[in-house]
Image 1 (cartoon, rainbow, N blue to C red):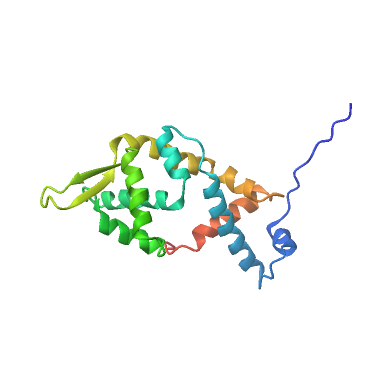
Image 2 (cartoon, rainbow, N blue to C red):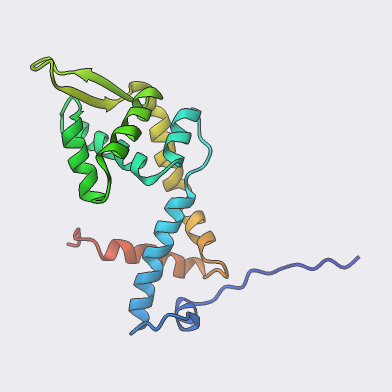
Amino acid sequence: MNKVVKIKKERSLEAAIEKSSINFKSIDQGIDVLAFSAAIRALGLSNRDLQPKKLSNYIRSGYLQVQLICSIVLFQMRGDPGVSRDELYDSICEVFPMTTYSNFRKILRLGVDNEIFVRSRSEDDSRRTYYSLSDAMLEPLCAYFLSILGDFGNLYSKVLEEGISDEDMLKLISRIADHTELKK
């Protein structure tokens, strides 16, 4: 019996850019667009089935949920006991300006109902409510973020159908870092 083996062809970044139907002004412009597009797609693919189910289902249901988690974590990272609903909404609207307040409240409530967030009253002003990350969600959230980072290179390469060499893959990933403000 003859088996047909499909061999994954690797091509250079330059060949991938030139084959593209997009009219890039330069190879560098094509590399930049490809690097960032593949990164966003790979992050989207990273929503895998993780335990506990309530965190996995909550995150899988949309970018707003991930942004809520990250915003609350960032407020807590600066030493705040939590974040008020209004401050959290303002934070979300910086990233997603078209977010309606009713949709935001619904998604936030789902996070509280699923015990991803804890809602508590301020000790200074009982009229003020704070939202913080549930202690029970810290370990699953860390596992989720680490699994994304650990598998990012694999996911990133799967986004590019015909594949490119590992060296060029690293070139794309480093391109993202090259365009940050953290250069020396």
